[in-house]
Length: 399
Image (cartoon, rainbow, N blue to C red):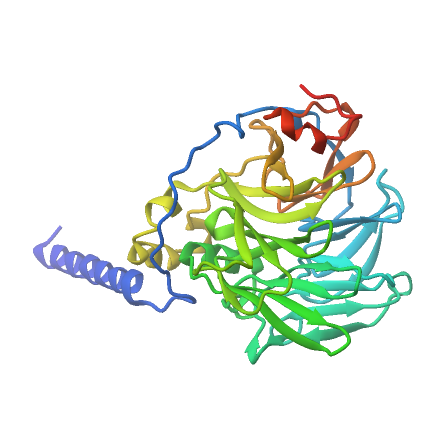
């Protein structure tokens, strides 16, 4: 090679390296990473010792529908929010599947009110998503946007919903990151958790006044939400910080970054990222750990600059961690009641679990067209402390 060609090659490589360096260090990111102190992971140790309880999982086929992010059991139907903007329903034995509604966005969490109307959190609906209502579910009811802002700030990432017996609607706005602009809720969520920006909120919508108020803010990806038995408190998954909160429903715009008597952390330093939380039977609350803890996220917690570089990478290169099959159950105090795993399963990325009288159905973001399930009465749960046995159904044998 001539000196001229070598010189041109060197200049080309140097220019490309410079441009790449400038891009990785200076290109704008959708949300700025912040410094935080990640707790040292305890890994899969008690009460999360590795087990194979989910090895016998069975499956309901869903034809061409996939990624049931959220599932609700009602009147012997399984309702599931699917990729592609639709909510379907299917019988627990896999028969009579049908489309209930198509929002045109990406429905995530949803719940039913006392009159059977469907309340949906959809971050890709309309201009920037929000809380939706669909009446006459059996007859293809009309979609109505109930709210897309709270106290003057837009709702950009409506995520999970639960409706109280009084009709009050509680839901999460996972992050201020603009999911609609990014166009993919999965990528938007991954970017927010990478940033750990703590801009998520817990909101309340009053159907009578049509007002939306903020109960809590500054959560690192405010995700699943459930009501306690007396409906005086909410349990909220804070995905980006591996923990679960218990929040008084009367709270007024409190911060997750400051101590407040209206909120407490009931379980912390989980071995995975908590996604949905669903009330089950006899005091159980089921939580899906959609990903195990990520070494990069923990290592870079106090290095926002490093996470900024990672955010500029193509989506397939984002440090997401490996998939794993893991579901836990807690009580209202945050005690671990059950821990279900299968290290060998390819049915990973479980976001939550919904309990019927005798089965447990799994929400997931696995790229399969099925809903996984197990028969509760054939499973052996791990009893970690004798005092927790009262939270286990007496018909379920304890190992």
